[in-house]
Every structure is written in structure tokens, then in C-alpha cells.
Length: 536
Image (cartoon, rainbow, N blue to C red; front, side, top):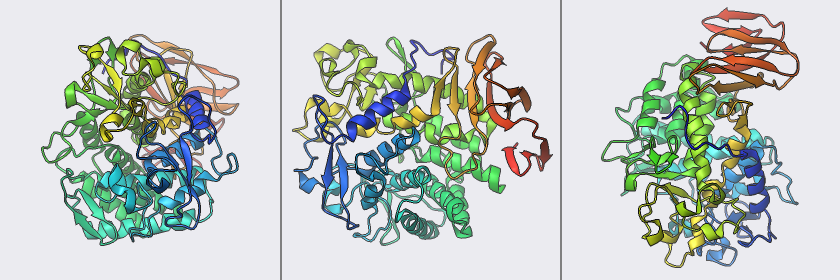
């Protein structure tokens, strides 16, 4: 990936996330696209009201008056709630609704699976993405739910659901017994299944993550043992089985288990699997991280298909991968520079999905930028248009979406994807700019769920071929800035701000420590008192 991606622009991701939440959860929006939310009173799984969000703008399969108002996706709603919560919006009490409680209807008890799923009922499952037949769709909602429960603790019935999910995943891992060679898993029959969908061995990463989070939450050693079992199954793979997001989540879980529990999983190998992508013919062939320049734009860092039509990147995947990989550097700091460089490229290229951040000539619907005030992004960014627009012939890249392909009556504006934009708060909470362009300050704690976050921790990287001076303002006055990569103090007793000299091409992981704290080395770890500040 380029050291200096061009052209460069840093979005105000926190503001974009705030605008997205304000629009999407407004039942009376006056924007041209109209409201994107409705109430669902069918009371599936729980005797309570829930809500639906359009997956894509004006998808004809969705809305209060279509399909009984029940076709809506948890991957959309959960990501929107998580992203909002990360930037400080209280979704337990917003405009009279407890949206965090309302999403519990996705916990499917009626069908006997007893996990969070992408829809509330099988009756709408075949209308769209992956319910009970596509493993990542069934596992990832549980990852998001656990993360939401960390951001919004003590919501009524949430811990009960967390427990039941953990028990189901324990049973599933016991049945699988190291063999995750399936397209999906039937959590009611407790049986691995194979269908036309490629095998998804990286589901082990999702199992491992949820079970380790459950162990941290409840202290049950069974959850820890099955977390290890699932990650061991992932580690035992001989090639990349990367698809969507569960492999990066497994990498993060492996790194934490190595650091906190003394395991020895091959994190470097798994990271290679992510960034080099899937080559196996019976996996999701070609899925990986794009390293390329399309037309006048560097698009390195985006996740999607490396091979489809010259490349097809997705905003949702590109954002969500930051959720596990940025906090991972706390546990495996030797990868800090690589992750920081990837994030610089990823964050820069991710703006191109928004209608107001890519030229009219490079997008399908330039006249509709005001439809949602460019709050809702295009689903995808392709190397080349695949929808036969004469205007876009020979144009690279092209912002567009698959919505019109899903149903013959879907309007063109279904290219704008709430599902893809929903996790934008992850970037909003994580990314801070500094006084030096292209030197980002990445919050490593914000998505390090179920962990000790006593000390603020930030990842910085200097992409220039000369040293730069970065103005660093700590979270609390009077703290010392300790870099766990170089194992040196960069500043002590900081009042106001410190000027940090960053060498060319180097990264640092700064932990903000109490001034005067005595660092001790114990079993190759660095501690202040009983708090671990560096695992290596």
C-alpha cells in the first residue's frame, strides 16, 4: 500500500456518524428520501415492540406495510446502535425509545436456535441476506450484540440472552470438535450443514470471540476453554478462509488469548490470510484487502473482492475490520506499523463511498446527492461499472450498489445502503486527526470490548520519509506518555499538550500513565501495580 495515499482527505467521521444516527432514527424525517425506520409490532421471540430499518434506501421488500413489516436485518440495526453508542449517543433512551432493548427480538427463540440472527423470523428469511443458511450471517449478529452489551450494560434481559448465546456456542464448538468445514451450523439440531454457499471455517473466529467475551463477562471457565478450542480450529487451517469479517475478529481473539492466557496462536499467519485474501477454490475465492489505484484514486485498504470485475470494495466490511484490528496492537505491538499504515489507506479511501466525496463523473447517482444529504453512502466501490451505464464506460472507480439487482422493482436509490453506512460510528469513535496531515491518532481502547481499559491507549504512525512533530493532548492532565513499542517515555507530567517527535516511517502505541508510576517487569510483561501496560 502507498505510504502517502492520494488524493487525501480525512472525513469528520464522528460528525458523519452523528448525522447518520439523527437521520436514520427519525420517524418523521423531512429529507427527500423520507423516514428510514418503522415500528414492528409482531412481537416475534419476545413480547415487545421492535423496529426495522431499510437495508437500502426504498428497498421494495421492506417497510411497515410490506411483508408484515418484518423484513429488516439485525446486521443493520445492531451496527447502527453500536456505532451511535461508541460516539456517546444513549440509545437506551432516545426520543422515548429504548432501541437497545428493542433489538432483543432478533434473539431467535421461536425457531429453537437461541442465538441472535439476522431476521426475527424464518417467514422473511428467504427475502434477503443469510438467515439460517450462511454461517457468517448467523454468527456475526452475536458478536455485535455482545459488543453492544459492553457499551450499554445492564439493559433488562441482556445478560440472560448473553448467557444463552454462550451456551449455544459452547455446544456448537463441542459438536464441531475442531472441524469447521461447513457452510453453516444449525444451532437447533446442533449439526454442521453444507449447501451451495462456500465453506466458512472462519466462523471459528466468531465463536472464539463471543466465548472469550462471555468468559470475561461471566468468569465461566468453560467459555474460556471453548474459546481456545475455536481459535485453535482457526489456527489449524492450512490456508485463508477469509470472508466478510469473522477472520479479523478471530485474529484479535488469538492475539488476546496469547497475551492474557499464554496461548501460542500464529497471529502473523492469520493476518496474512486476511490481507492476502482467499485463494481456495472451495472458499470465497478472491476475498481480501484491495491494494490498488483505480483511475486517479488510491483505494488500498478497502475490503471486498480483489478479483470481481477488477475489484469490488464494500464500505461496511472496510469499517468493521477496524473494530478488531486496531485494538489488537495493544496485545501484539509488533504489528502496529502495518495496522496503522493500512488504516491510513483504509480511512482515506472509505470517503469515496459517500456521494459528496467522489466526483459526479465517478458515481451512478450524482443528481441524488441531496436525497439523504449524503449521509447514506453507496454500498460499494467498483473498479469499473457493471450496470452498463454508457456514461460510466471506461471510468475508474465507480460508486454504486447492488440494491437494483436484488429485486426487479427496486429503485435506483437502493444503491444507497444504510446497511453499509450503519457502522460509521466505529470510525467516528476511533479516529482523531492531529496537527500533521496523514498522521492519525487511533483510539485502541474504544473497540477493545470486555478488556481492561484503565489507561488511554492510542496508535500513531508517521508515513513521511522524515521525522515530524506531533502535538499530543492527553485525555487527562499530568499523565506520562509511554510507547510500548520502543519501551520509552515520550513525555512526562504532560500539562496541556506534548510535542512528540516521530521518526520517519515509524509507529508508536502510546499508553497514558499516571505520572510517578513505577513500571516493573514481571514475566516479560510491563506493569504499574497490578495493571498490565505491555504484554511484551
